[in-house]
Image (cartoon, rainbow, N blue to C red; front, side, top):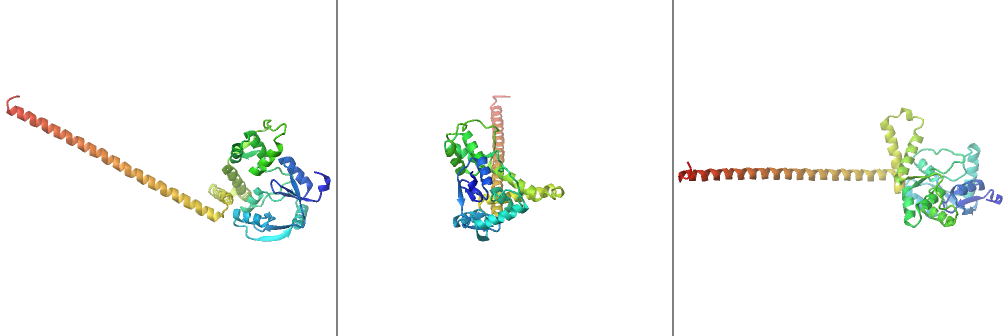
Length: 304
């Protein structure tokens, strides 16, 4: 980007991220291939969530965030200039990236884990694409290679960002060249589980050696529940309650199935016993008939 952009606050139109320096915006553009940036006025109003640190520009964005994160209750009104001042003050004590909070950092914050400050960090999971996103893009008519490239270039920012990138780069000479390094394809559940594991490790790093396997599993389960609750757009307690109901329903279904199988087993056993009794009764009647026939023939002198 040109030097005249220095000092401006820029927003990536595809991902919605804010950048307080042209250098950070340039790095983002190089890493993702996205080139559509707009300038944000320093006087523009913003609302910052106290619980999550999320910055929203409109009431619609606030409502969407509240639906996704029910814990987001307290909001403070300010301006982009206020955010820039806070960022400048923060950078003096910690030379980290000036990029706004990422989704991963937000997820870690919601789990009670303080995100690590990174300097010139690459996007998380730069060589990982989600299976669900690839399938959706392929179903839209894109090749798997192009779908993977779009997701990698947009740092897995979503289907819309991937489509925007593909639209801009369909005529690139290397669009169909194989990957220099094949990306990993993981399901969204696997990504959630890894994120939850990172939360658990980050929150218990100092005392992990003192935790028992059961305690480590409990922490991992708690972090995973928070990640899945966020994805489901509900609170952790509501998600746990839904999981409890689902598990109890599964137990009841299993118990009912076992009861049905037991009843069927009893019916089968009774049927076999009945068949055996009928067979023995038929044999007894045949023996009695044979004995009666023999006695009658002896009486008539037909046999000695």
